[in-house]
Length: 477
Image (tube, rainbow, N blue to C red):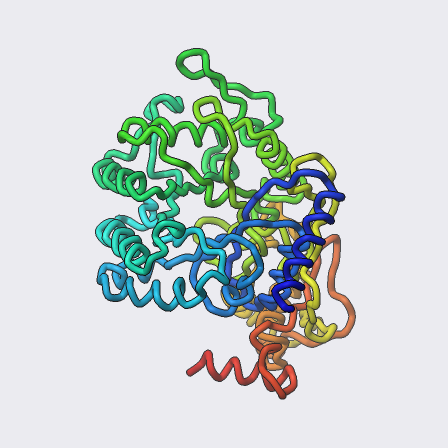
């Protein structure tokens, strides 16, 4: 009976999607986990299904969100983090991982790929994972094969686009980086021999962010800017040019037909002058319309498989690459869509379905106390609040850039207060702050109220405050 009900629900969902916009684009999304207050996985999966999202890419194999994907019909890519690559150099450990995270679910989890590491050859890592990635990939694939699932579940390595270069900036000159050329050639041949795709992350935003000389319009799909390549090939956007640079690198490595999946593509909405809702919507509109046409690229025409990055804003991500790192979500931290989006690419722009059943902490904010006496302690307390909280929206050109001095301080204090579950001790700051029930949002800048963390809500038989305290104790231990 339960199986019949699930099948009926799937049919109703498909009919609803068809009525809303015709054929769907089987676009995927990246479901990250670096949030101080994650949403209930069951609620997130309901949202995914309501929006017809058919593929999900994870960065680990946490059984809680993975368990919510069981029997969902959503195709899954699980992840093995970089800090586990050395562990996977032992075949026995790879066997154990596959047993615990793959075969344990049987056919209930629609698992398609296991991502071994995440951008392990990134230049910023200074070769830290150079010797451990390929052996880990081979061990995981062997373990999948030995477990009898290697024909349907493939091990892959999501890579940053910096693993290939073009000396003259022409896609036709694409080749793997000289320092990793031999390693990459061996790895792509292994992927080819085992029927696995090449997974690459392509970010036009980063092209714009990293160079003031980069042509702005070339970052989008409707910019009208073209560059010419050899043989009369023309490119109107950097996404296609980057993709074909990889395709040409694969040709030089001897695997011209290796399947390519774009594991991450997106545009942040805050934390930089070019990271905003208007430009993000422009990028996604262009990308989704492109995907719906199945035109592919000049060198590799046809259907493309792409995962959007990412699902939610993640307030615990490192901001070393830039303040925008915490604002990649197409949904806000509390599961609300940021702007209209048509995943079918047909131009029927409407807000996506939000995450249901979201609960919030009490409606209260932590703000700067005008009556505080020892204001000499302000700089140190602001620095502490921003280092331990999230002040990325306060920068130049960002959503909260227009606040006055008092509101800037209040914003920093409140973000820390909310991330600390509104603990009264988190709104002291040497007597410089106070709690208020008056909404502190100002000048178009949202002072958020944090959601009730999924970890706290899952604790049975106790109130939310006690659940948070229990979680805090566990984290401390």
